[in-house]
Image 1 (cartoon, rainbow, N blue to C red):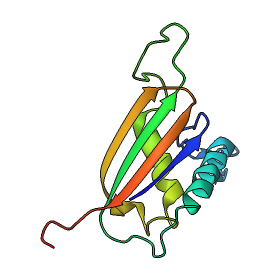
Image 2 (image 1 turned 60 degrees about the horizontal axis):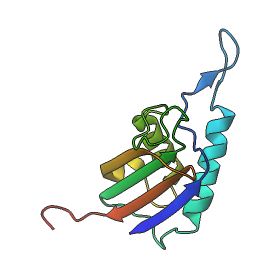
Image 3 (image 1 turned 90 degrees about the horizontal axis):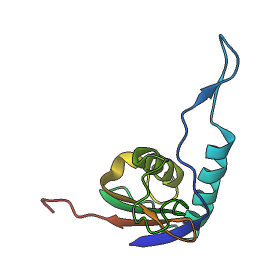
Image 4 (image 1 turned 180 degrees about the vertical axis):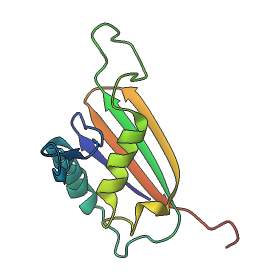
Length: 131
């Protein structure tokens, strides 16, 4: 199992944008690029000797500060959406932990309120059912 924590109010994966009106080039928003780099740098410290190529499980716990209007709230019901958090992590770890994000067959994601803001990421290799 590999686990690590990324500190900060991690942004979610943003959709690609286009520059210009007609034949504009697609680009990734700078905030997405910056957070991908931060996640990749932390993941690189835990890089396996060989990239994982079998089925993989992924657990993500995203902590964000509770709103002042509800300081005892446990679950974070605000943006970013869970699927965008998952996309950010999966895209960031490709080529560092595993060969391709299609290898992820199980995901557990929680959005909670907590201090400090952070994202805890855990990955493990899963056994094939018939193996």
